[in-house]
Image (cartoon, rainbow, N blue to C red; front, side, top):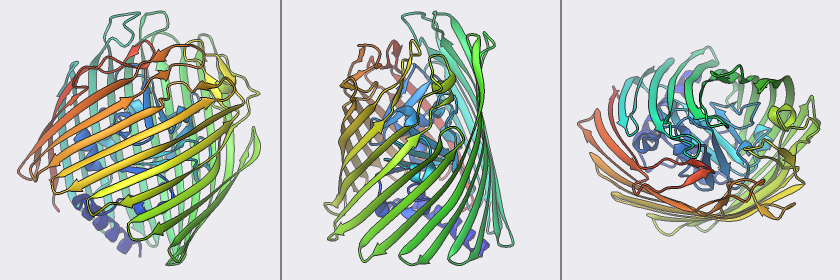
Length: 593
């Protein structure tokens, strides 16, 4: 049975990649595959073809174009990067790689700046509280990254890139898949001399190097499907330290996973996922380091009770070791969490209902419960509405508790939030989307990035709306996404740091069989830099252009200009963002299918 399902899955993936009219499939929102039109939560999907056309240098450059997302960065490539979903903090976004959580146990967020697009097949983003299915950190939403897998038959890709600031890189991948076996291997190297990331202290260019490799192997033995994968990214980041001195650090990020799936019956799938992650930073001018090692296990059981009724139940365990040494002080801590979750999804006529709950037993904070409820309802053939509400939480990071300025008596952050949304088809080529959202967070933890002061405030509140419009007809596609939000610290009646009230993303593309043109516009209004200062980051607007031409069936030459008008702006105070950047890319694709 598994061999038949695998064959169908590989063929479906091949067809989906070649047929843009098919709706995307989303897994993250409900832990089961769903058509995006059925999902009861705001979501975005970025596929491999879109990733290639962006010529992005890391994952954050891919997702910053999506609705409700803002990115903060301390300068150029490889520098510390934060991702905010709907005004929630960067450590309120849970990041998964092939189902395994990769958020750092020390700082709390994921190392987006070290995840290379060459290793990635697709990215799914779910906005809104998701702790019921995924546990800690999923207050603002979940970002799941799927690494590349083999398609049917043999395939291979070779990419060479060159750009401004002496940027150069290459990537190669190969894979093979059939009804009984799939295997893939991908490797990439990227290097840039960078630019002065803190010109107020030093005019030295600060560069970055990244070497990444990923591989997967899958097969079926009897009724058990086996999937083994590994992703590793090693890098070196040059930066300017607090005193204006030149410094650099080595980084290591690893994700190793083993998935065992068994179907006791046609209606029951049982999947055991074992994962291990490493997030390590080692300073080269001192003995300082930050280290996270996590062992993770998830046992999910999915029951397709009938055509309109799916029930999911599972158990999760994580064991996280964190260690840090900074300026002569540090910590070495271990935390364990055991969790159970359930979710029931039913279709009652045209109405789709979903209820879920999670129980968490944490060895430091005891027992916590989260829940969620969602409903979807069509209104005629062209309009579909949905609403959801749920609770979420985040256990403080090790830095929050034991780092410099931290407090071991901090309580977990908790939240309640939800959204109401409408999708409306104006016709076969035009679609409108309107979503209102609200989140209230108790015991919010905020850190001053300059003085490392850490405080736990009583309450924060975020509300706003997202408006989206897209048009696709013949060779033209354009889209507009606008987000207005009021992310506020209620204790101080102050806008939360580095979150803009207004963001706009607009894109225009023209696609022919052999060539394409792209234009992407981004605007963010002014943002407060920190709760602990009055510094305000100015509003900015950037325009990116891209083009590509395909020679025959295998060779593609493309180019991109980012920040065409060389806008001078900052995503973090005293750290200038990327100026005008030009890159060209050569890609060779081979696929026997």
